[in-house]
Image 1: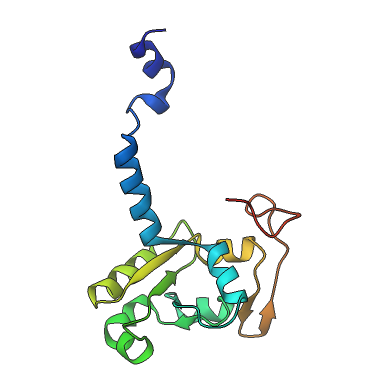
Image 2 (image 1 turned 180 degrees about the vertical axis):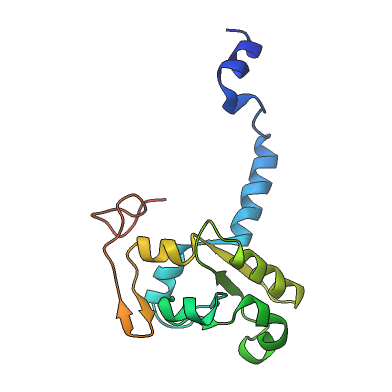
Length: 161
């Protein structure tokens, strides 16, 4: 196969991969902007000083339906007027919204960054928090569901990634 045939037959390589140096810059930057649901959960389970605060940027109705234990509730539309009263600018913030189909956490992270906060977005949002089997709070109390085997290992607490 010629290189042209290879890229035509395999659309993944139609655009060649970035150089290793460019890939390292990109993926390093991605980790600076994103946090994993599992990593956030394990940090919260460890107790003690986290070094960050978790922020739920959804509506009150969504918050009541279920949220990460210990999270601060601050809907995106209220960040500009209420962030200073709820958040310490010296403490990084990890935002989340519903899930990967929603960019609310991204909008919240942008609003906080524009106010001078260090911020990361929790990938997967509340959807993956629940799907991975982590405890959450509702207006009725605590709840925990069985982990979805498509999102979390069925037998081990660590996926190995």
